[in-house]
Structures are given as C-alpha cells and as structure tokens.
Amino acid sequence: MKLWAGRFQKETDTLVNDFNSSIGFDVRLYRQDIAGSIAHARMLGEAGIIEAGEAEKIVEGLKTILADIEADRVEFSLDNEDIHMNIEALLTARIGDSGKRLHTGRSRNDQVALDTRLYVKEEIPSIIGLVLELEQVLVKKAKAHLDTVMPGYTHMQRAQPTTFAHHMMAYANMFKRDVTRLEDCLARLDECPLGAGALAASTYGVDRFMTARELGFSKPTDNSMDSVSDRDYAIELLSALSILMMHLSRFSEEIILWCSWEFKFVDLDDAYSTGSSIMPQKKNPDVAELVRGKTGRVYGDLLTLLTVMKALPLAYNKDMQEDKEALFDAIDTVELCLPVFAAMLDTLTVLPKNMSRAAAGGFINATDCADYLTKKGLPFREAYMIVGRLVNLCAKTGDTLDTLTLKDFRAISGLFDEDVYDALALKTCVNQRKVYGGPAREAVERQIALIEEFTAQRAQ
Ligand code: ARG
Image 1 (cartoon, helix red, strand yellow):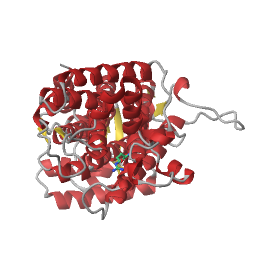
Image 2 (cartoon, protein in one colour):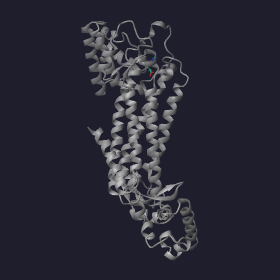
Image 3 (cartoon, helix red, strand yellow):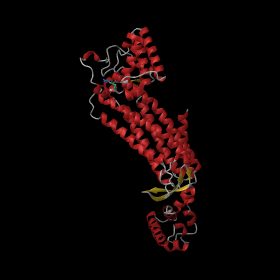
C-alpha cells in the first residue's frame, strides 16, 4: 500500500507506477536522504515535537538502514516511488510505529530539495580538486617549455610568436576561472531548505536553524516557497560545468590538430591514443575527441534543466523530478573527463623542432619587423606598409623576412640595418614581449607563480 493511499479508492495503474517512480535514479541520494532524516529526527526530539526516545529509535533505525544499503543488503521497490518513501517504508518496517513519526513537519518537497543540495555540495569540492590537478599538469608542462617557441594563431593563420608555456598558461587561467565559478556556486547554495515543508512550512515550531547547522549549512533558506521550488543551484552548477567543458573542448580541438601530420606539434603517449581497425598507420586522439564530444552532452544537460524549470509556477511541480538525471549525468561526465584529460596531457610529448619550424614560416615576425622600424622613429602605420611590401616581395621570391638580404631591406627602407636580423630572430621576438601577461620567459614565470599560488591556497 502506498504511503499516501488513504485518499484513494483504486490502486495506481502499473503504467503510472513505473512512469512516476524515480527510485531508479534517485537511489544515489540515499546517504543525503538519511543524513537529512537523522538531523530532522534529532531536531523533532530536541524541540519536544516527538518524544526523545522515539527520536533516538528513528536515528538508530536509519543508521542500520544506511549500513545495510552500503553492504548492498537492501532492495528498493518501485511501489515506494522514490528514495524518500523507500527509506521511510524501510524504517517503519524495522522499528514500527515510531518510524511513522519521522515525517512530522516536513514533506518530500523540502526533502528532495535538501538531498540534491547536499549532493551538489559534496560533488563541487571533488570537481574543484580534479581541476586543480589539471592545473598542476599545465604548470609542469609550462615550466618545461618556457623557451619552446611556437606560432600563435588568429583566424587559424600564423600570427605572432609565442611559446608552448604561454599557450598552456592561457588554459590554466581559464580553469582558474572555472574553479572560482564553482566556488561561487558552492557559497550561494549554502542554505538549508529543510523545514520548508510542502511549501508553507509547518505549524510545529520546527527548529530550522538547528537542522541547518547539523547538516553543515550556514543558515536555513529564507522563504519556504522558494526553498522547495528553487533549482538555481543545479542550473548554476551545470552552467559552470558547461563552461568548463567548453574549455576542455577547445583544448581537445587544439590537441587533435597538433597531433595531425599537418601540424605534428605533439605526440600522444601510446597509452593515451588508439589505433584503427583497418588503417595500420593510424594513431588516433580518441580521448581528446571524446572529451570534445561529451561537451555536447553537458550542454544538453544544462538545456534540459533550464527547459524543465521554464514557466513552472510556484511551488513544487513533479516536472522537477526530471532535474536529477541531467544533474547527475553532467557531474559524472565532468568527473570522467577531467582525470583522463589531465593524464593525456601529462604524458604527451611536445615536439619543439616542429613548432619552431612552423614558427619560422608564415611571417609571424612581421609585426616585430614593423616594430623595429617604429623604434627607429617611423610612425607605426608607415612601418606597417613597408613590411607589407617586404612580405609581398618574399611571396614572389620564396624568401622569409630573415632570409632577405640587407640590400633587399634597404631597397624598401633606408632605416634597416644589420641589427634587423637579430630583431627578427624568433627568440628575440618572444623575449621582447615582456609585457605583463606576455609570452617572454619572465612574464610567463609570473603567470605560473600566480597559478601556483592559487592552487596552493586551495590545497590547505
Ligand atoms: N521524487 C520526487 C522528486 O524527485 C520527490 C518529491 C515528490 N514530491 C511530491 N509532492 N510528489 O521530485
């Protein structure tokens, strides 16, 4: 018999029973559900709403249920719909009538709001931990490649020289923002909805401050209607995770390009790449491709949640049961992608010769050539025109700027001297870019120090 059977004269149709039930996926909230119930029971006892002895029995009963679930000794039933009613039914079966007092002054609506919040509150720090591990790999790679010159691109055209370290630190900064976004989300969700009841709290005088404290929240939520109808924290988390996946996906795309024969900037470790069933020569960047692909999944989860919540009137509506699979899927996907991506990055080999060969072509020192003339007094726009003519000349002769003769240079501007060759050397081009945030060794070392400080603060 259903917990709510009193008002009904017929059994629920089996189709509806299956359709309505969420135990298949909300079973993963059993720990949070039991923790919430223990705090609630203790509070009921403490506040004198139920007898202290009964509260004690409930708490003990819940503890044995927890132990049995962890030992895989519990069977959940579809008839009991969700994790909340399953646990309540188990409790009453075990301890008798005292179990029936647990639901005093609460509803499944505040219960599910609490359970998902508690779940998210636990998952965010572990995701942050995984991002910080990736940061460490980035720092390690950057330190090893402070002088590894590579072409920087705009419009996928070789643009200006940079280093592999500078490129890695660009991603390190993106992931740093991801961490702070996750921290913001965690700080905002730190309010306990328990005691909000179905929507309008209750008449029992439950102590919401006590349960909030017991469950590790800073305070109870301020409005009971909002408490049971709010899923902002899940949407915020999925937004943050979507942005994080977007970063991983851009990075994956670059790794995939860098692995191609057209670039060959990096070589993936054999343990982190896969072969083809038909083409014996293939070594495929499957990990990066899957991370790129799974990004779509996480975006989909965010869209699911936004769409489920759109136009829902206050307060709780059953539509909201649809939040969980998307939420869990996004969290699982991110937790799956981060470690394998970090390990792939950690084990990849950088091929500096190929990078510098690519950097030598494509006139990525053209801006530096214009800067050379500017520093000799020419206005930048005129310098720009002159270098444009030099590039045009090179295009005809098959030269690059540094293979032109001084005579060629001087034919276009008398300001050129022997020192132009040094100014055009890629190492010089990079190392002159000492500006805060730039690719010069010392500037990148500062960037590394900032990321190291950021991760160290969070390791404590
Ligand atoms: N399984 C439900 C959910 O996930 C729990 C809340 C049910 N509340 C209700 N009034 N039917 O949303």
